[in-house]
Amino acid sequence: MEGQVAMVTGAANGIGRAIVERFVAEGMQVVAVDISSADLTEATASYGDRVHAAVADISDRTQVQAAVHAALFRFGQIDVLAANAGIADGEPFLEIDDKSWRRIIDVNIHGTFHCVQEAAKVMARARKGAIVCTSSTNAWYVEKNLAHYNTSKGGVEALVRSAAIDLAEFNIRVNAIEPSMVKTRAAFITEDPVGGPEYLKRVPMARFAEPAEIAAAVAWLASGQSSYITGQTLILDGGLTLGIDMPLPAAPLPGSARADSDA
Ligand SMILES: NC(=O)c1ccc[n+]([C@@H]2O[C@H](COP(=O)([O-])OP(=O)(O)OC[C@H]3O[C@@H](n4cnc5c(N)ncnc54)[C@H](O)[C@@H]3O)[C@@H](O)[C@H]2O)c1
Image (tube, rainbow, N blue to C red; front, side, top):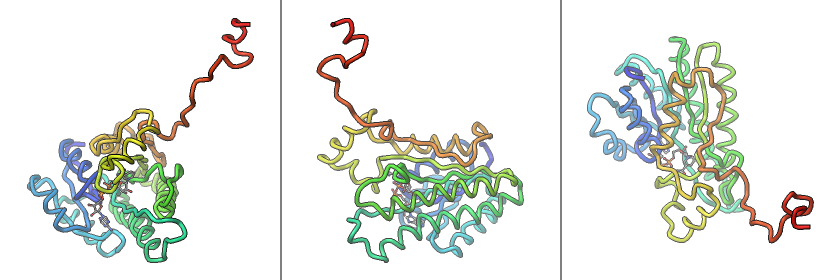
């Protein structure tokens, strides 16, 4: 991926910050996009010329267009988009008001659409590109008190499949990653001394993901290593969604070889 240009949204914290670090390590130039100017300045300060910081709220198309123009002005192309920025909030279903619902849908679905479409316009001209959107296992393995967030990630995955089928003719691949619980400020449960260990009882690998582990999957889906993969979702959940825990039976079950040999 040496010499390629990537745009990364939500670049100032958590998973996005780890994606920027990974892309720079791969030899890429990066346009780091985030709504928080202060966080973005801090996150990108050490990279020098390799990273261009662009403050933008992805829910506003004109701000996304400005970030894309900045990328073109600075680096001349966009080969990769990591559409990662997203927000959540925990609220009981009956208490979610329109303002809260709309903000999450606005950022997570409309914002992701703005980024995918504006970056794809540039990629289509070059007839090549790779887009990786950050979804979540919440798209289908829903969690309580997160209806707006769960819904938004379901939308992101439909968007990814739709963009993948429409953009294939331009040699643009579009895929999603689905992390479950990653150690970032947004995943408050990872820092909860009681709720954290309780949550981990449901995770076969019995730990939370590191942001760098998510960034590694994004880098793979953005690279030529995954050149025939499009419209897919890669689950990164330490086994969380594989199934439910089951205790051993007290005795061999009827009809089994063990039961027959005991008879
Ligand atoms: N942390 C997890 O466990 C987890 C699990 C599954 C999916 N995700 C997804 O990963 C992505 C990143 O989450 P994170 O955990 O790193 O969160 P985070 O809060 O650590 O980082 C998110 C970044 O996005 C920025 N941002 C928020 N709204 C924005 C907007 N409107 N425009 C531009 N930037 C904006 C924030 O300023 C922040 O820097 C999100 O899409 C989230 O839904 C996270």
